[in-house]
Length: 170
Image (cartoon, rainbow, N blue to C red; front, side, top):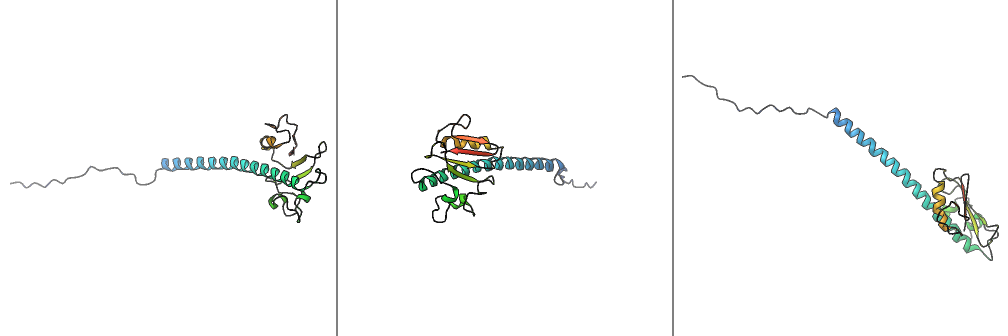
């Protein structure tokens, strides 16, 4: 009698991937690059909004400080007076180390305040060195706080934009 070899059950040979494929690598690199670009754009927009909020808050603080030091009118009002060591009518973040509003706005410029020439009950607050990319948006954000109570800076008598400086009459 013939002897037969027992048959071995063989599993079909599966072709397994040996490692990380180039296509997968490229896909993940593209996704990572897109995530980085989106993050940078979001940061840029968010940073601009935060700067705008900081300036609006500072301008309102300066106006409140001017009201607190005013006697009959705003004659003689200045950042040095508002930020004086015996007065502290405005937060030090706005006053700065020199206590005069120099180099303290988010754009690296100054805050200044003087009495309005036409109406001494009002003050003119200037924000200097505003980034030209954001100057119109910031002016629009400040327009409702002006004495003229405008909805936008264009055509508003209470706000002027010249070069990279915004002056708000409050």
